[in-house]
Length: 225
Image 1: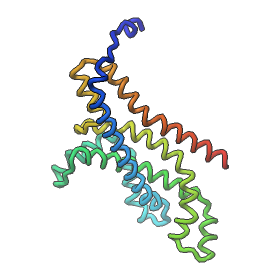
Image 2: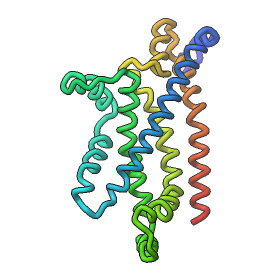
Image 3: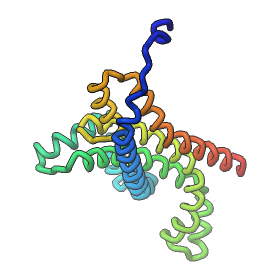
Image 4: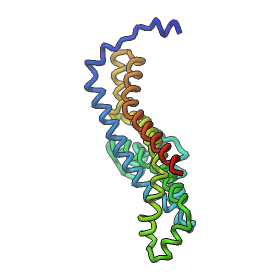
């Protein structure tokens, strides 16, 4: 503790490097937004398939979900970055590779959230809607999804917080997001502790509002039960 107190704290570099960090923060935010929209789209497609009564419809979506949920994301990033070009000739730039890996990984989690949300709507409501002449698509759009979305909002809020933190993993392939820039500046200034504290604050600027919003939705939903 005494060593930590005696440490010569120095944040004088902030003014000089602030534009670089803000640019990296904006890059992180863009990665978060694009990956979030992509993983939600994946969840919207794959989630209902996981609830299919037909095993052959569930098979491929289930394999996708389990592979991406049960393997490290950093392995997935490296696989897309190295193996796809070498073995299959499929190449993406570094940023696209990072977003693709994040989207596929969190798309698997989003699919499970959609599966649980849709599965939580009472079966009797679907049967009643079909009995009055609604098609399966109409039942999904008008009856199932509105109720399922309400149940999924809080889990999605938590998922976005984890997604924002995991954007730091794309630094391994050279994407100039916050953690990548922190490593670069830290190598120049030898002020890694201060730099890590500074980028932690920048992450919190995004994550704190997400956490409050997620908690608000959770309380609102529970109060309506």
